[in-house]
Image (cartoon, rainbow, N blue to C red; front, side):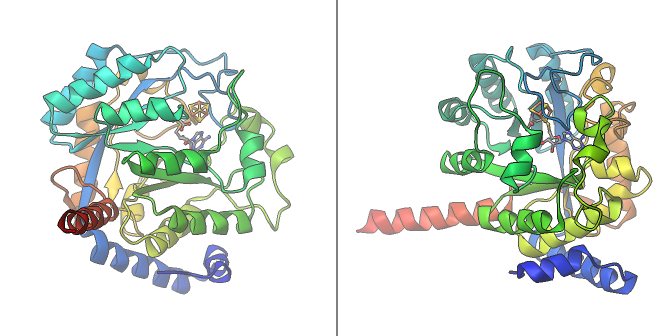
Amino acid sequence: MTLPKQQILDWLTEQRPRRLDELWALADQTRREHVGDAVHLRGLIEFSNICQRNCLYCGLRTGNAKLSRYRLTEDEIMDCVGQAVAFNYGTVVLQSGEDPGIDLDWLCALVRRIKSETDMAVTLSVGEWEDDALQHMRDAGADRYLLRFETSNAKLFDRIHPPAPGQPKRDRMEILRTLRRLGFEVGSGVMIGIPGQTWSDLADDLLAFAELDLDMIGVGPYIPHPDTPLGKYLEHYMASEDLQVPATELMTYKVLALTRLLCPDTNIPATTALATLNTKSGRELGLQRGANIIMPNLSPTEHRGAYEIYPDKACIKDSAGQCLLCVTGRVAMIGRSVGKGRGDSPNAQQRRDADSAIESIGGDS
Ligand code: SAH
Ligand code: SF4
């Protein structure tokens, strides 16, 4: 569905419960028609919280001296992968800070090992790397890559996301296009309610989702972290009251639902950040308002607390097994089922079909 910007803005600012119920119903129906009732689970392994960057919003920023840092060994990661296999997950997501101690060859060997020992899809979420490094990761067998553009307002992004020390500024939109060219399934997304983010910015984010033709779109509320500049001096960064997007649960559902309407075939997670704002039913409501993916945590329990992108993150005390039980229970409670297999995005499948049709036409001539 295409929606003009004004209509997106009208939905984003809509307050009437009855109208919002219509939005939720439309998003849920679109989700059912395009990606079905299955909820696909992606096991999340947060394998390093070391980061060279100083993003103003994130607790893993290098300037946060309070955080104790860790990097999992290959064996520790493979233990988590073993659990993913035992739990029948179709995908593992390897996520980290931009850790200068991660050697590219080591990472590629790890991906190769997971691909050779399991049938799972491998998703990487390891920040901004050079194009040739991304090519190596793809050659090693990585299937998907997640890199949120965080906000489509370039000025706001530059303000909250300074370049890594000694490195030039990178354009995340450009990296997303490179990832697509390299054949990754491409995931991106934004934070909702970043201080300084206006309604118009958020509407542009939604339009950018459609334009980038993404395979996965993660949207979650911005959650202030007291040990970051943005969290500490929140007021200083806010846009004027009538322009600033609130970082609320309700806003997150609106963006989720509109994302589903604009990008009906994409995979959309009910995020941990959403579950953090509403531990009781955030995941379920997300799944009923457009989402079709959950990313249960597989990280070793002893390190969960240290992957503190934002405070009071949901599920940090639960073991991987408890996360599975909790998530499957929530999925069953709303009458949905856990998906089997890798849960590739229908969007990517359509692209692959079109490519092979073009190839076969080329082969005939
Ligand atoms: N280093 C990688 C991956 C880890 S950060 C990267 O930056 O891409 C993963 C995501 O966490 C970020 O894309 C951002 O959207 C989200 N995040 C960071 N700080 C946050 C905060 N304070 N509130 C909500 N989400 C946050
Ligand atoms: Fe590092 Fe990613 Fe956090 Fe930025 S958002 S500080 S790159 S972990």
